[in-house]
Image: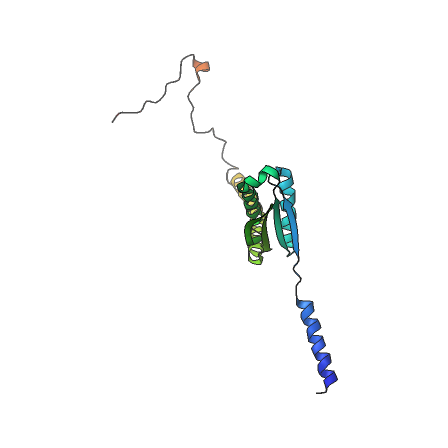
Length: 176
């Protein structure tokens, strides 16, 4: 084999390997300890979208002033983020405080995403399947009772005090 052909094939292999490699970028989402519910939900939806796209997410919680004396508040926010996105990703670097910031890195979890997708498909199949069976079950009793007369319900209720003028008798527990 001549040297030119060897160089060409090596370049083609390198080009192919670059094409197959996936570029995982790190996205960052910043939170504050006193974040409101609406803002938390919006930022967490964005984190979910990043994880679905296959990106790693660096979650940064910034403390200011007196907030620095209460890192447990920040830890609670980060734990809420993890519980909200556990079906899409997992914690790669656990929360740690460095100065005014507490950081954590989440990475996409393909196994969890596949399991969630399977569960969604299964529930959708169950709903579409149960919709047909409920309709057939509803039609079956009508056909079975078409020739029989309608009957009154069998449960009997005691008359209220307004109807009889007397207080209703209550069952007393027996001693025995």
